Image (cartoon, rainbow, N blue to C red):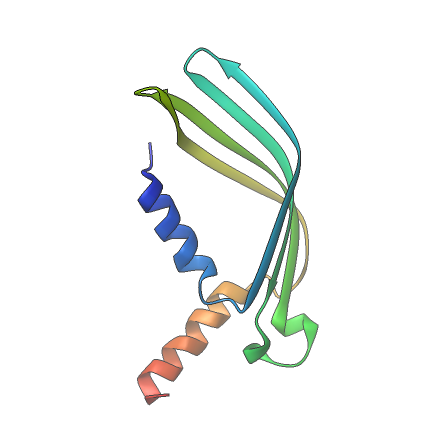
Length: 112
């Protein structure tokens, strides 16, 4: 099971440097079996970072997928036990997270 702080830090590390993100989840289906639960959903995720260039092929990445969160009840509250995401279609720069990290790394090393 991942702690809330670790999950938050992982998402902030990936998404934090992006100028704009919007994630829309829909069609939730929740299944509960005792102290275990699964939440399945559909996702559209928009990511934009204008510093990568003017073209949407470079500065924008949109993907569509299916996600699933496994939950476990512990000490009377639900905790995230697993997260899965299957991308079914994407448009734009699917290498955007790596491109942003590379750009930030070169800015840091050049003193900008």
